[in-house]
Image (tube, rainbow, N blue to C red; front, side):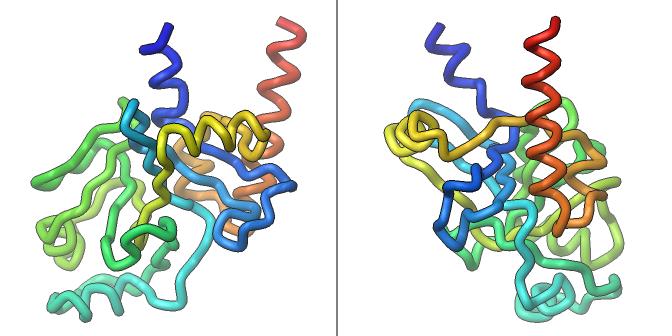
Length: 182
């Protein structure tokens, strides 16, 4: 039972309920890439930063030959770290497969490959991560701060970030209704 509960968030998205007022997490959709007895880690998928991937590469000493793309606010912790959420058709030196569809990577090789046009089918570069202590996530879940939803490739990589929260809420509602009638 504990092992099942341990993994119920892994690979899912946390969707902030309307009662969440913290500026970082209000109307946020967070992909959970780690969920263990030690804590939970995720990436905010729908908040942009003023910098872009071209700025990021230049600041890290790369000479990018790729177009400028959105840089996402992954979370409030370690905002200088860059994590790529991506499809599993691509790997780098420290890629962690979250599930059969999605993986995360954070290393210089990732930036080198990207700066040379070697990219996965779907990806988002995120600055920082969202981290919860085990008791903190349990408390937030008990306080109904988050909905849990399984978003697909299109939702994560192709839905306009301004619509992602609404899309995630709709998908959660549909899932709940489907469970009631099946």
